[in-house]
Image 1 (spheres, rainbow, N blue to C red):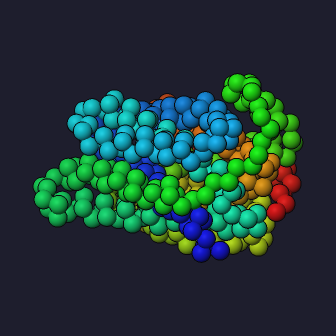
Image 2: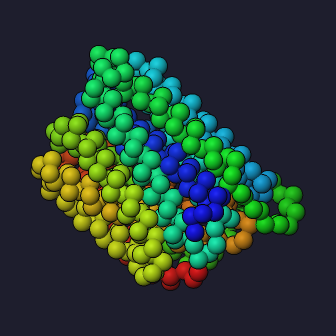
Length: 410
């Protein structure tokens, strides 16, 4: 299966862009934001503004994604748009290096722009899953992509951790100088390993009828078509709810651990555990989903996430955090990969970017609610444990709605 050059080069984009998700979103940005760029703010204010930054980026993608999907399919621009948004993310990430201490507004703006580039490119990356592989391969290939992402992100994060703990290896005396340099390393990694997709991933377009309607009208008609199908509608609602919990934990876990008083080194080690557990787990999840059914695999993963949220509320030691890291690594990539392959089976031929535009719109609109909810609960109650407990509701409701969806056929 993985001998196909188009599939391997497609999966390498996950290897490329996951360094942003791992090193920046989940790893060093929350740490540097709290301890360097926004060190003058209180812990609650830090959590609030980090949540608002994540929510703002998601809100922008919510409005852009459906229109981008229509443009990508109708104008046959899926790969060019993917690469364009990738470059936007790469440049913005590299510019973190020039943000000085106290420049938290500038750093947060760069973060929003880079995150928009990252998430918008993923609209088209997800859409390319359908043309690069056969229907019977979708679960395995989707899992393979996420597995590659976990490995690439884990390797890069490990290098950044080593360099930040021993800055003298790069000729620096302060860790913060190396961490800022790591943002440039992330940008270069993202750019270089996107090249296989640019050169070797083949995008096959179906012949669509000539449509002279403007993009806005086409987008509104697309919404009507997608949501008129009951099964597609139910799945997207379920996805919108449960993926909110997944994304919120990804984005806010380090900030939550810091608020509970855990050492930064312990938090980064936990993140590394998640990455390296996630590499084989995501690939294995693709095979499990193919064997037991995508819906069953998804329901199991959501159930584990509900348990993770409760354990996060009760944890008190670094060992507890490491256990959570293992559990998250076992299911995070699987839930994401199976959601993508589940939805891919619902898409009519020739409309992959359009449908994945709506899929990503709902996923990112969900990511508005979770971070704001966590930040708001922390700000109001001044108790971060209540903020993580609020996420449990998303997994419970998401699973209830998903249970009403009929499994897709291959």
